Length: 480
Image (tube, rainbow, N blue to C red; front, side):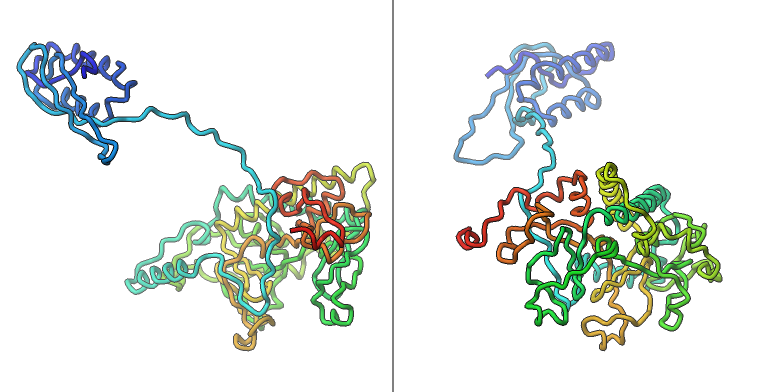
């Protein structure tokens, strides 16, 4: 089968033909030889090397014979095709082309929009009589520990990058300031919306419900729940029931001395989100932080150079508490008056946007900055290692003398969502326990803002189960 009348074969080199041969090479590559998918990149590379590195080239006619392949056998990508000269133009040097069949390029797949599932399962409740799972697989933790131990045995300094060496990450400083500003907007918005949207909290357990009345689902785990047949004891909720306060110790130097049990009262307790932003580069005069210019050096787990110990200031003795009220949820409802009814939807949308900014910002910061959490209780510490305060009272705390079991924290531990039942009609009848498997859940902030008129992100809708029709109590047993 004669594929194309133009081919190349090696011959004697003529310097006067250099320009013509270069032109022929470009024409040869741009011909239909490539569109027929009979010439692969291997053949092109061979021809190009023949022009540049062989003794020469000449123009002639060649016949390419394609072998017959069987459908019952498999072949490799490369195949040898014999050829013979049809027209004599110069010296003949027989050879073999290495070619392969190349399929035509298909159209690139069109990137579809991120599709969320129709419904997702509710988040599981972790048992309290068991340690939390590690966010990083334990096998990877052991491999990293063995690598550090080998470097320490060879007395080799560990290579640390910011912020692991105490220096700031310049790209994350704007993110930290954005999170702090959104945190203030979030607290202010929730404090104003709580004057309009009723929130109920159980006085015996941590259950929260956003509606006109509390639900009738029997899932209370309080101490006196047996006398109430597991019904909740509802009271008026506060901002701390919607936005769970997770606090940590503020450290002037995270790489300095650890907090001991006897010195725990010498340190301030502030929201963990604010402490994370301070260590990421936010400057708050009331909560100063040490900014290093030289990196911390470590060999294994031992710090060999931290730049010396610096006396930590005591800002809590002279700080003006009135300038810090917008960073904490304490007393926020009494600080901000109820908004006008015409501005409730706008405030709800601003609060919803601020909630997403804080959550995404904390996730970005935690990819670089180390945050530790106790594997048994809700204690969180922002820093390269945990403190030594003996206040853990959860599972098997006697075996640990009250010390926390530190491990890497997750975003949900630093900024917990606090899931609540989604109510389709807040002014309708209360939710019933017989059909609770048809109800959905959402973070308390999201549910509160949605009932106030905000547009919620699409990622929360599958968990809220908006497309499920709740049957009557008599029909629930007939539903598959």
